Length: 459
Ligand SMILES: Cc1ncc(COP(=O)(O)O)c(C=O)c1O
Image 1 (cartoon, rainbow, N blue to C red):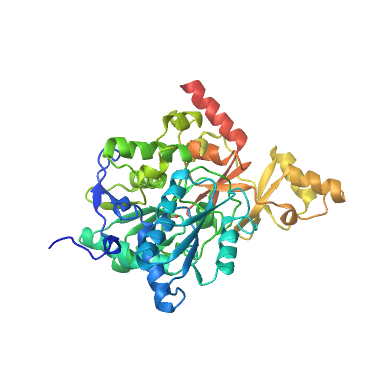
Image 2 (image 1 turned 60 degrees about the vertical axis):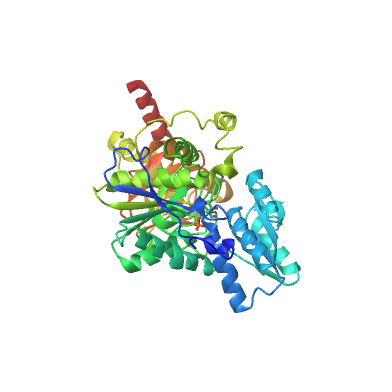
C-alpha cells in the first residue's frame, strides 16, 4: 500500500517545491515556491497547530476533552480545528473583523466557535483580539490557550519540518529562504535550521508597509504601526516567536503590489494562493533582482490558498474600487530621489541641544524638521510643530530637543521604491534613509512631491 494514512494529520507537511517561471522571467537563479496550501488544512499553519497540540498534550497543558482557545487570523485556527476534530477537543477562535468572512466560515465548518473583534484598537485594549482571547481562555474551564505569538512550539514546528524538508528537497543546496513575517515562526524556525546546515544561506523576511518589523530590524526602534489591507503578515507588536537573529534582510512591500502579484500567481503559474503569497513573491523578487546568480536556489514560502480571498483579491470589483488594479507607478527608488536632490547636507541635532538653538539651525538651513541624535543612534525627529508647542507652553527655547522629539518618522533604504515611500508618507512626515546601519539621507514629503512632478514632466 502506498500513500495511505491512519488519519489526515499524517498528511501535514512534505509539501512540494514548484518552480516559478513566468513571474520570475529574466531571473537566472532557480526560484522555487514551497506550496503550503497543499497541507490538509490548506496552509502552513497545520505544521504549528499539530506541534502546539502535541507539545501541550505532552506537558499536560491540554487535557482530554479540553477546549483550545486562540487569537488566530484563520489559518492557525483551521490547523488547530482539524487536529481537534480528530483528537476530540473543542475550539474557540477570536478573529479581528478585517479578516474575510470565508475564513470565519472555514473555521465553523470544522465545528469551531468564532468570536469577532474590532481591528482598529490597541493590543492592550480589552476589546482587542489578544485581550479577548486571553479572557476567554481564563474563563473557560479545562481550556488551553494555544498562543501562537508566544508559543515556542510555533518556530519549533518549522525547525523540525519546514527546514529539514527544504534541505532534503534541494539536496542541501538552499541559497536563500524568503518568507513573510507574521508571528515569525516560519522564518525563525526554518531560518535557524537552514543556517545550522549552511551558515551562508540568506534568510529574507517580507513585511508590509504599516507593520513595525522593517523599522525594528533596521534600527531596533519600535514604530507606530498603521493600517494596511493585506492579511496574515506584518504586526503592530513584537511576538516572542519572532527572532531576528537568523534574519539577514527585510524587504518591504505595499498592498497593491502584493495583490497584483497574488493574481499573477494564479493566472500565470496556476497557483491559486492567498495574499501573503503574493507578498512573499513580490518581496522575494525585489531581493532576488539584487542578488541574482545563475544556478542558485532561492526558495519562497507560499503560506495558504486563494479560496479564502475570493471576495477581495480575486474580486475585480473590489480590486478596482480600492485602486489596486491600476498599474503600480514606475517612479524609481529612494536612491533616485536622493540623487535628484541638489546638494543637501543632512542636518541632525544632538538630543541635548536647546530648542532655541534648534530653531536657529532650522532657520539657517530653511528646513522644518530634523533628526535628533543620541550618540550614533537616532532618538527621534524634531519638527516645527514640536518647537511651537514648547514655545507656547514655556516660552521659547529652554527645553532640550531630546525632550521634544517624537517618533513620527519612517526608515527606508536607497533601494526602497518611491511608491512604497509614498505609502509610508501618507502617515509619516519624514523618512530617514539608512544604508549598512547608518543614516545617509533625509527625505520629506516635499522631496517626494518634487520627484513625482519631475517624473511626470519627463514622461
Ligand atoms: C496567510 C498567512 N501568511 C503568512 C503568515 C506568516 O507566518 P508566520 O506566522 O510563521 O510568520 C501567516 C501567519 O499568521 C498567515 O496567516
